[in-house]
Length: 410
Image (cartoon, rainbow, N blue to C red; front, side, top):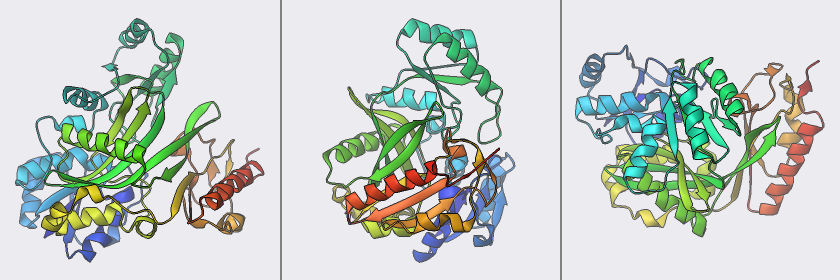
């Protein structure tokens, strides 16, 4: 079995090691517009194919390498992985409307057509049309964002026509995470409720839920940011409800082979899709997840690739087993500063439930105020069989930030 990974950036960088464990060989395909801000390990690959816009030519290269399956390692690789799978005739996703797996407007349209709850949305390149849509709806706030970006990029909540105009100007003046201009803007109803996400793996249309997480948010510098996420037990009734809806979304988007990362808001009318990525979830810590649940999304994907019959025969209703409480804490900088030296992190590492930490910037690098995931200094993982211990350590970590964990800028 030989696998082509398209854009093994971010969480995708963990996939080569997992594939080796399942006796699957692999190569890398670099798309035209990867997210260069995500981590990548070129040393893991003996072969890299650079896609230069010609799907037929790239498919010929993969055919010469005897590739059996193509998967996306990151969001930037989703559409190309689908196109290459179709060109090669290897197991892939449905191709009736592949763009719906990237374009959020088309995504919600596909979900709605499948009879599932979805957000009211509208897209246009004209500010006047977006304002008219929002005013005609008469329900505020609304959300503006690029239709095909990721990571909270330019997601702006607007409470008036004036705020829409300001957000519009900001988005069109910027480029998205993949270097493309924002010529079209997506406007969407604001979904009030509690947000969750589901990490899954699919093979030949059979879906397995690997994790269900609950997001917690807070207001920082006038913006709503992701505070922390808690891993839920499979037995939790809400987790099962969210998971069932997420699996139906995968079917609606024809995600049949590969990983899935589905964000869902539990509203008064029930679960409603925020967005779904046909790729691994971000912020992966495979070994830590395996200690807490017995598996992880990266290894599950490698297993589905290397042992498809075993994967599809397993009972998907069994889910996972939570053996420890796990909290993923997104670090928050309340004002501009600099990243601390190594010794400043010692009190954080000494927290009883501290497990690991991933920093997004090097020591002494300039640090912006945290307003989204792109300005998050890093992530701390707290893990313990004692849930109260996790909560206490989380509160202490937040206090450290207030007391000056980050060197303040003048």
